[in-house]
View (tube, rainbow, N blue to C red):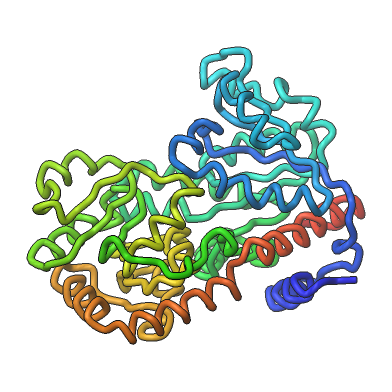
Length: 402
């Protein structure tokens, strides 16, 4: 019998034009091979504090009856993570090959798992061409997933050379995939507008958050006024955030690393001990750090589907976000958060408005928590993923067109 999450997901997929099949809710073995983003390893996830978050959904899929293999770009050191994910098979560069050679030979180096699997999936677009080549070599269906549009981000950053490469790979990979998974309707519309015939194969499956781990802590005592979590890169607009808080009597915790870290620290320092700089926090430590803040702030110029923002909402924090693509779709102004412009003056005004009004903060935080649980819980998103993966395998076995 379909559970509550299954019923919700069936309605979700019907709204997108996909008719779920009855058998997809039964427990069964499904062999899935996940291809990591080009150059990324399990060690990369661990150093960035992303390991637990990234593997969580695949551990949920295992409980439903999936057998999971990870194709990583790491060396033999990645095998040490087997103790943290004992039921997931780790396929890595244990031959110490040069990166380009390893990438080229992946379909044959890991041939046993690829030959035996039911389908192949990508984690992001960069490296999707490697997954597509493996899928075509072994006649397996491909599910091409991306949390953000690589080409759009490259264009926004002004790197047109990278944007051209990204568009070529997106067209090749998405055009040949059995199903394409994006995290927002805006991404689905973008792809439909430039890749012919893709609409019926695109599914919107949002990012997830472990709402049991990311939740309000009873009796929490704020240690800082504001917290930011994210990559210290131009699109995150941290420079404007620091300019905004410079004249205010507020404290700010910045968690993250990136190309602008040294420049920002050199220019702003700690603003008289009011700014604390932290490297990326692990998935297990981040809920505690979020619960120590009075509000979360993300003033980005653009986002895809920001996980850090959803995690802050799940912790019941009032969130302040730039009125930008990817943020405005998540934050309903005055209801689930507070939107502002991306210039320093607008950010400053929003910070003052939210921090001075405890009743507003409580209302925004409670609504944000409810919104995150209803829309983005790990169990809900895992069920949506499970339904889709089984649909793809069934269609392939029945010889149906993608």
